[in-house]
Amino acid sequence: MPKYQKLYQRRKETIERVFADAKEKHAMRYTQYRGLAQVSNWVKLKFAAMNLKKLAGGCARRALTLSI
Image (cartoon, rainbow, N blue to C red; front, top):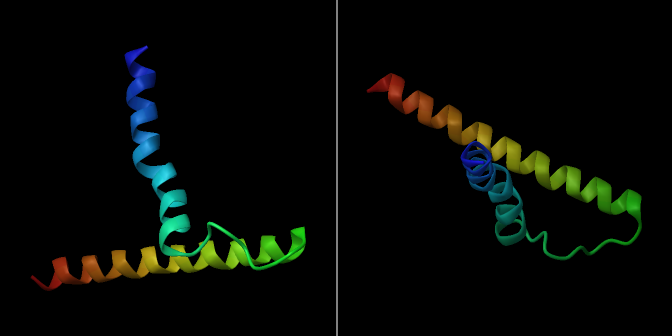
């Protein structure tokens, strides 16, 4: 049982944090659109933007460590 508790703890720190950030920082608590297709496209764009921000942050951190 402790093995699964550690696994769940890690999941809580990584996966669920993404959804919490989406709701808090990217206005995904509510949607302005109606219909599955429009909402799906809106969600895809939001998560693409979040992934690009994550990539840019990682690249910037790597560049800083390489220059030091």
